[in-house]
Structures are given as structure tokens and as C-alpha cells.
Length: 212
Image 1: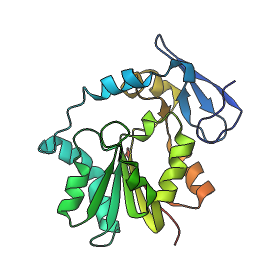
Image 2: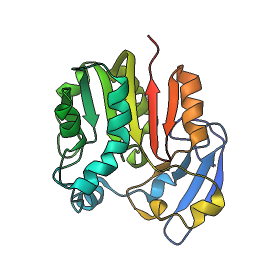
Image 3: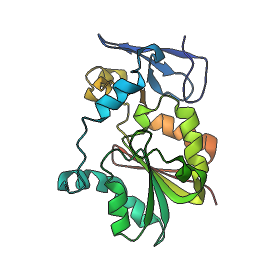
Image 4: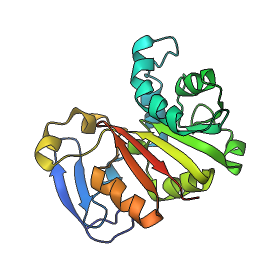
């Protein structure tokens, strides 16, 4: 039995196992997560991230990020203040939103570790391809809620679990830095628990709004 790292339910059950890792699923929020003993240490995690090549001038990468940037920009007011959480070594979404007239701060545990930006509130925050990496998603989720003003938006991108059959052949689980996997049901659980408005945009964009 494993404790869920998101909702802390004590009832999680074996979900899937391959040659690399064992995965569990929470019976309450339906989060799928890697056995904590099989996570990378920080130095190995950072070395893996260093292999990423995120170039702000890459039009394909911009198209990818536009899937969250465009709907978010349609919902926030002009000249909003935001935070790109987990922006990585080549911040790009922040530049795209700045080009739309918004003011965007940066935070990343490894590449932009200035925690001062976490001491204030914003009109919106984004986390693209971040949530699946979190070792303590409960703590970070609460941090995200605290970072956004009432009426503000949280814009996320992550691939979502469908079912165990799809999971078995899912390339997304094979990244050793991916340790928690959300589904629509998981986000619906969080939205209901925390009284958030929830929108799904396509297969991998999640928009949440805090109540006024």
C-alpha cells in the first residue's frame, strides 16, 4: 500500500509494472504515480533536464506552447502579471505572453531558482510539462493556488492518463523524470475540492480559475 502524494489517501493500489518501475493509483483522486523508491536523485534529474533543447526561436516549439498560450491570453485581461513556473533553461512561453503585452516572471528549481518571485501573487501562472515531474504534488499544488489572486488563472500542459491498456504502451511514462500522471478525473477531483472552474482544451491543456 502506498500513500497518494497528491491527496494523501492511504488507499492506493498497484496499477502497472514494467521492467523499469512500478506504478500505483490512488482510489480517491485517481492519480497514477511511481513508487517513491524508484525516483531519480536530484543530480540525475538535473542531468536529464540539461539534455532538453528548448529554443525560443523554434517555431515548432512555439506552436506547441501556443496550445496553452492562446486560450489563456483570451481569458486574461490586458497587461496582466504572471509567473511561468518550471520554465526550464530556455524560457519561451513567457516570451510569447510578453509579446502579447503581459509581464511574466520566471521560476525554475534548477535554472531560475529565485524564490522571491514565489512570495507574491499574480493574475495567472503557467506550468507546461511540469506537473508530471513533481515529487510532492500536494505541496506544489497548494503553492500554485497561493500564487494566483482571486479570479486568476492557472494554465497547465501535461499528457493525461486514459486507462491501463493505453498506459501499458504509453511513451510518456518511460521518461525517468515523469513520476506522477494526472487524468481528467484527477483534475476534476482537485477542481471540486478547491472550488476551481475547470476547462480542458484538447488532450493536454488544463485551465483552472480561482473563485473571485
